[in-house]
Length: 362
Ligand SMILES: CC(C)(COP(=O)(O)OP(=O)(O)OC[C@H]1O[C@@H](n2cnc3c(N)ncnc32)[C@H](O)[C@@H]1OP(=O)(O)O)[C@@H](O)C(=O)NCCC(=O)NCCS
Image 1 (cartoon, rainbow, N blue to C red):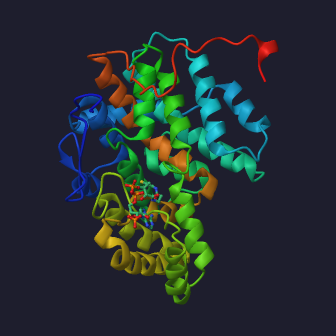
Image 2 (tube, rainbow, N blue to C red):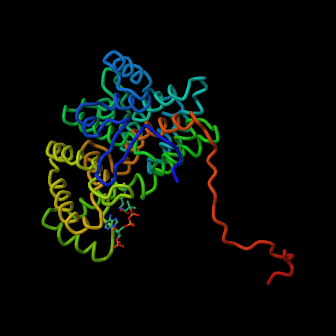
Image 3 (spheres, rainbow, N blue to C red):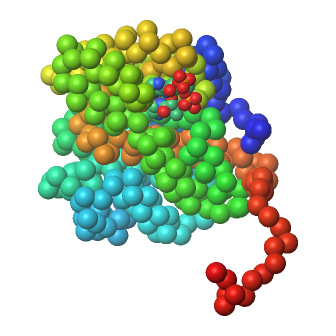
């Protein structure tokens, strides 16, 4: 049963096509930026030049974190799961936001702040000082700048921008549904996003990207791929970053990310990981393709995030930093015609059982 009608994202799982507001993901990944895609998903139109400039300026003005959030990032146990830290920090940002802003404005503000808190926590964890945002940089470029302290190259910025575009929305996935359930009670947008983060944290949803990367690191060299893949499949173990509930062919996002994984691994001197990934892909598609099991977005995204400087534990947070746009866009669309989401369960237990006093129970 469908939870709502939507004009935000359409997935054609049979043909491997994905559209945001009717635009092909291939065109958006080639010609667009994260800010432009966020504008499109939230406002249902591509911005003109003037609108985009003003929107980018607004986003760049909201990158700073409230003091208490920065304090929390400094004092929290550095070994905490970055998704737990993100969830708590978003809750603190929500508590600090006492404005009467509408959901759209709050969503823009939150999306602008999340990269600041992700990069601050990764740096604090490795004993480095957080780097304040640079308002002259684009969302993707500033994200990487706050991570390393250096302005990214054109290839790095573009890889980050495209990765963010590709993760921005994906119709009614588990985390988006969690956001809608919360929103449907007329709770606030921060609570919805916290629900989304909590659902995305699970290894069946947002954490498969780091598992795929771990697999490439474990294989170690392209010559070892064949033995590894056959061994794993013969033990009935799954290959991470393969298979999808909706796509029964290539996930278009994997195709797009593959070329960026090639470029950034070359740039960062870890191209052997890309070569391993390509060999795993070829072999696994030959073996599993007839079952409709193909690479999904997580197969190459981990490799891209890793090459751009993110630690594997942070990959799901980068995913969340982009998906927050989809979560909030889907919530706003749902609230236009809200109905409390209250599913049913099929009861299979007894009824009318005689109550036994505790002293008489065996
Ligand atoms: C995503 C996923 C949960 C979708 O599962 P699903 O649509 O319910 O598919 P099923 O679990 O019914 O699997 C169908 C068949 O394909 C096989 N299969 C599915 N994913 C596989 C994988 N990643 N590696 C190897 N075999 C896989 C199953 O073993 C099953 O084989 P069988 O029919 O011989 O028993 C699943 O593909 C998976 O676990 N993938 C790995 C984790 C991952 O990458 N998650 C990110 C998703 S975006």
